[in-house]
Image (cartoon, rainbow, N blue to C red):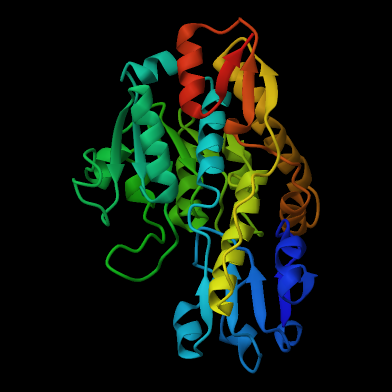
Length: 369
């Protein structure tokens, strides 16, 4: 069994070596000759898996250690009788943590949010958006949701896209689709973006093309009241550098890049691979123990766990140099280890009862003296 894998999939050799010969390669520039002799192909979101890549190959299993599938030609795989599996929800915790960190970086008043004095709108309430919704509701926040694939029994705060766009904070967590009854390609373009209220915060940690990036650039050239956080961009890795200069926080598609999220993705693909082989499942194992953080506020705690401003600085510094597209991929490849909130136990006595409650909802473990 020959297994070809993206070199950036963590634990891929450890998890797949018992079942075949594992070869790792850069995922962005995979060529047909690279996959010709492979029986199984393991990728991330940067690899386009389609007829051009796989025609004439021996591949019979494709696994993507990601939530989205817009980089996969599912119709072609079905025609070729190639088994496919993704990893939905593998990094949902990491992305929700990212949103909380970004809001802290923007100095959000969490007491206002918890008292329903700020409205949060979520576009797309699947694995990530749904988890963000539940976290916010536990805090007591006022939340509006738009997801045409859900009904009121699944989410009692569903409303129209227009109503969500009138929120103080708007978060996108959609896949990228061009067909079907509700395509997401450029779902936020000039008309929709103009509905954002004064001083709104817009966060996209779903897929870049859900927002028309040129329309967003034009809007930001006209309005300096908006604060925009982009982790995902159109035309990655060749993103709009003028837009990069206009947004408040910029990161290179790493919202879900926690250690736990990436390991979960590889493990979920491994489990699907074993089902395809007809092999028994492997028991889950916990990666690593807990760490301690001593903090005096919500922002202090999350900032010690994840400094999103450092990601923003690295991206701006490296993408203003020649070879920006290569730098974008390099930032992802060399991304430093980041752990999710639930890996941390708070220590010390400096936090208020309110801060303790919020951080507990975020996932931090109980305080110890």
